[in-house]
Length: 238
Image (cartoon, rainbow, N blue to C red; front, side, top):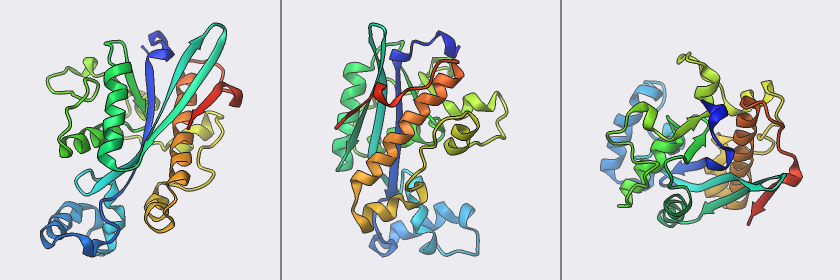
């Protein structure tokens, strides 16, 4: 199936998320109680809800998106051109800008979204945060009533599973085994909240997110048995 998809019809993406508040004590008493209930099955009895709050960014109910990076191929005669753009800032505004991109430029039946672990994280997280902000879902994220084969999503982690749904492989590991330069040469996901709230360095987070998008595109190229992107083929739209 992947070999039949035109690369210019794919929007590659990655998101970075953080807890909705910097500190657990900033939550209302009721939100604290709900967090304790939501996180109980993962933290167990060994860790308190407050101590576990640093991981709140992985849940859309208790986290928020601080940037969405996207990449797409542009056909230019014999040349390949891969463009990278990032939406960041106040969450509702960045979601509106991302939604505008989907509604106006990636809204055809042949268009698909692609992320690593996107089906279990990026795609539902974005959709949930849009609903929380009272935004209409773009067609590519509105899955109500769609059959599995009608969902316009590619997940590189699922591609690597080959039907083995017990198998989890990080993007970092997949890049390594496929001979793709590692995207993890600075921070990792566990450090994003610290960089956002303490260092207040959104540029560092954006760079990290954009590198992941390039790596996801490189993984798809490897699956299609096509040459990897060279640095001169990548255009950073900043």
